[in-house]
Length: 630
Ligand SMILES: [Zn+2]
Image (cartoon, rainbow, N blue to C red; front, side, top):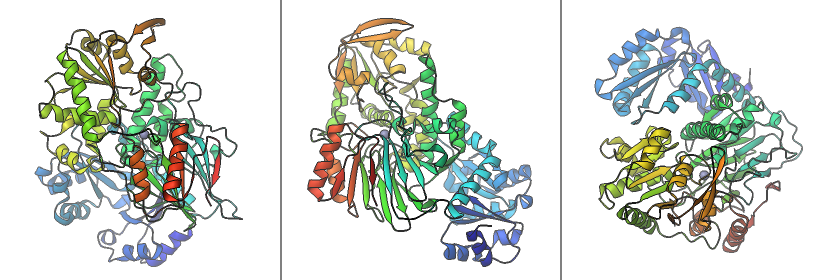
């Protein structure tokens, strides 16, 4: 038995606990004593205070009421106004998930109804909000977790043993090292290996969708050994940060993936889409749906601000980074006070229509890793109101001449931001009343937004709770669900607005629309997000006006006669000024800043300016470089 469990059991009445297991860093105790389950008289709280870990007490499955009976009881206890939808039992963990339209009413004053459910059924109830838009994907993901609940239980226990069983590697000196396997002086394939004497942790492992030559992180680096890997942390669900995760599972990784709940869901969705796009283009995908299922099975989700051990010498906390739903800055407390590292990943330091700005205050921070997507001196982003005005103008002008507006969007983040902006323009009658089509991966991601309103900002959260104000339920938005429907939009529909993935015109429906709309000067192409080096979007932005398309095998040359517009600064990334201000504001001030995730000149420029402004050590490591931070 692990020492920590022995210590806890010493604190509790003899024979009250039938089993003790780990769920990751959490300790779960099971009891066969119903009275002790319902009232442990502060015993658990005392144990928590003495070991300073999260401990949960649950009934042993043998004393839980039969499921059918328990479901009847639950529906009797919880008032009808709460509008219960599904009730799902997780017998391995003695937990029951109750999905309700009004979770507050289901919980009751001071948790009254939850208490009743515990007392009457001897199950541990968990109330969850029923999403306003049903998402097949979320249901599938939860299905995978329930079907594998026996495996999950063993897996989470194994993770706990790795954390609590003591050191497995030899410690002669204290040191911490970061190796850049991708994302060093580039945007795309972000991946950084963190090594300490005891731990091997990967922060992000993405793909570069805009680059055919070097699309994957450099896992052949000598310091990387998949068999030695203890944990993977994913900052957010963009493919350049998470697109390679299933590949690790294909090659035998079976350890934990840490991220927020929306990140897990969107990550599953985008990697499935990545496979589908590869197949659609006649390429062999680098992994398949089975590997993605393994990824989901091994994901441990964390809330913002939740402090969790991930190895014997690393403790993690995720903070909002303001970039997309569920996106995080990763705070790592290493070696019991030895060093604190914050991986900022992709961040937005100003509020957007969807999200609160990135957090800038941490318990401790000696090294900060900063992105530089818009970190160069040249990256002056116009004010938000100006950007929205620009969008409004392009739409109004195009519609006036009877054209179509094509907006290539990243399925996650920009798409929903644009939807909220357009919804606002429609409601305030700033743009004409035309159909708005949404094509590609966007719809499912939007459903995920409505499922996790607590990750969005205050205004949008309030709107989501009111059916009539929920921007994502605006009937103006019409989903294009098939090739046939797309054809109708292109050939038979007049003036309209089209939001389609991919955002950089690297495959997906946006390229289809472009091919069909490009030769009409009345139409407009509007870029609202970052265009990666090598992407078709970037080439058009640079002025290329004749594009070779590969359709059903034979190449076709299309002139770009439609209007091309770029909304400068309408981005989920912080601009230069935001980043410099953030560095002034960040609390505490780090001793070192390492810049990544930006074109080479922008990384160097930002690193040098941060050094001059703050008098701290800075650097912009290249891929395959390693930095010793302690
Ligand atoms: Zn991103």
